[in-house]
Length: 72
Image (cartoon, rainbow, N blue to C red; front, side):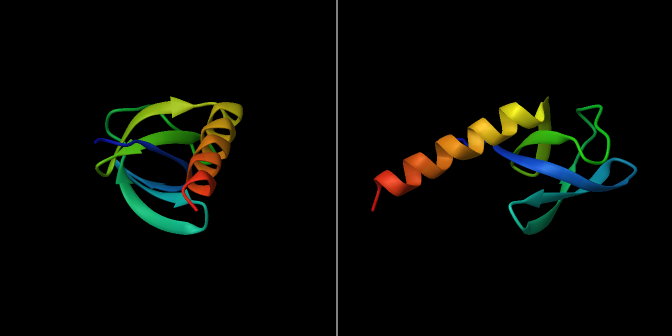
């Protein structure tokens, strides 16, 4: 199964960016998207593959929470 996870871009250095995954910072490749600091992206396998609005990112994260709560 392949998953893409929303993250907020907090720092950009060329084609690399630091992304915030709910308090966990990871480096991602942003060569495939046009993104600015403060914007949200979907990340798959270390690559930002799509930009998201804040609302889309929050809704996706809310749905993930629902799914994970249902597993308990």
